[in-house]
Length: 343
Image 1 (tube, one colour):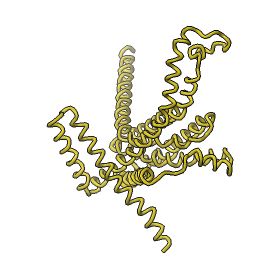
Image 2: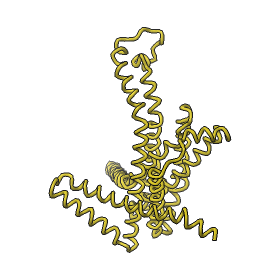
Image 3: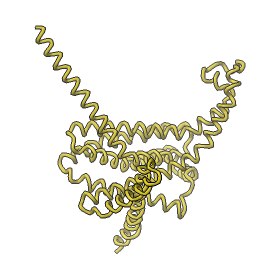
Image 4: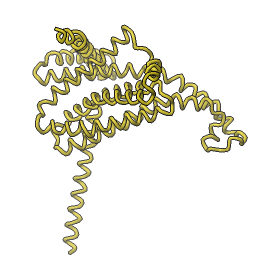
């Protein structure tokens, strides 16, 4: 009886070790896939706040919540089963689909660069006000949410495709688990950050107006006398609130610029790598050799920053390739295709 119990405990120990190893593998593959999709995640976080600009403060978080639920549905209901089915019946199609998604990212990035150089659309608040007069706020909100979810579908598809490509050599269940973890994790991170960004100015205004920050935090009666700690903290919290309000506009602009750069860098890199996989290796090799030459030159001057310099040059070359590809795609989409349709 004792030997049987020992055997059972031994089997349980082995199962626990296997489970722990599996969890470690999931963590490793999830981190690897997440790092590769970082550029698209940054762009997703940079793009989403524009869909809630102009709404009343009490509708901002509900709108973000609706977009987040739609994003989660995109990833788990549509894209995850589609990615797993693709890995089973047509794994060869992963690279071409990645390249198509990369070309789309380059097109979107080029459109943003062109908008910055040539001009921009009317302010979002004015567009929202004009649309609200005609259709009503509810219809406007539904339309903005639907547009955000459609944009998220493209970015989510690219994230899931990159994740699938990074775990294509793993088992079916490992692929499914990593895809699910990436889908849920990235959605929570992206829309949590978006919520903080969107509400940062409201938080700043509340702090700037708070004359009793400590008492308010403890929900003390309003008619009570200010505490000494309120008098001590008030200059700090009010200054922080004013600084937060002033920081939000340049933060949104900076996020937009970072998102545009990330789209071009990630999209260009995906297409370059895809061309290499399909046998057209010259562009990728040229970019790699030039980045390596820059890294070697910097290593002779400041060895500590050589890896960063090589990476930065590689990213810049991918972004430049993305601009060229995006311009070509915009030409085809915006001029050649309508011309062919008319003829």
